[in-house]
Amino acid sequence: MKHTHKYETISHHGITPELMDIGIKAAEIRKCKKCQKEMPFVLTHKGQWIPLFDDRESDEQDILMA
Image (cartoon, rainbow, N blue to C red; front, side, top):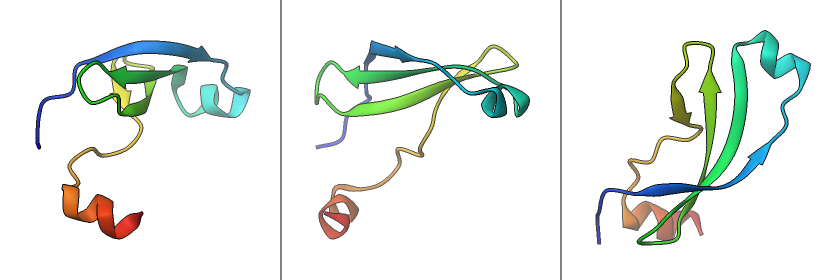
């Protein structure tokens, strides 16, 4: 069933100098309050938190990849 994820932060992680060089300032793991899906997010040099992976895959793709 599709829904809009409502993520909350569950952990923060250190980043390497190499990641800082490409514009990543911070990283954290977030979990959806509804479905419990975890997703890594990164903070860009522009101050935006973005998910590390594209989350547009369907349930059928999840089954095929498992």
